[in-house]
Length: 236
Ligand SMILES: Nc1ncnc2c1ncn2[C@@H]1O[C@H](COP(=O)(O)OP(=O)(O)OP(=O)(O)O)[C@@H](O)[C@H]1O
Image (cartoon, rainbow, N blue to C red):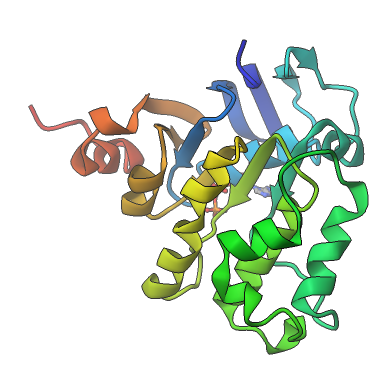
């Protein structure tokens, strides 16, 4: 049984349909990358899984359970943690205090301060620095670390690389194998196709709210993914 299963999910903002009959599976322990251009529906997908938005049709199952009626804060207790786009951390709190806030609704599991500092060595050196004085990459690592402190079974990452220098993006993505090795399942939304292909076991590409490509990452070339991403016919 997949850890996460979406069947025929529609989602909308008023009259504007953002997801059209979307199917998606994530197996326990797997890293799935969802890619797509601006407006493809990636953030809407994550919000629907986290319970911030509710589908207008279809089913979302987590660990075999239909979570339609489970509110977003209750989904954290079930083991779903979302790191939204934009690195929202508490600017007046230190790195360590931000991480401790994440432990508030903590489930049992492998993640604690030491494990987060191990996954993100850049945070260990900055543990007493306040959020406002961190670089963008350090803020992103803090936001991910804070979500991990809840010991999620499923970590949802929205646009980790947005607005960060490539070298910093590399620092963040280097933590992903460590996160996966602890058994945490990851669904990462990413615009950077190279990063997505390098970290994911499987990749799913959305175009205008529908899936246009879905395959194990090792079976895909960057060109195939780029063609799906831009809605182009693949070259023969
Ligand atoms: N709060 C909102 N109100 C109205 N429409 C929205 C809202 N958020 C997103 N949309 C629309 O829903 C569609 C899907 O947007 P979504 O943010 O899920 O795409 P995305 O793939 O995450 O893109 P981006 O990379 O720009 O975040 C787009 O057409 C977008 O304009």
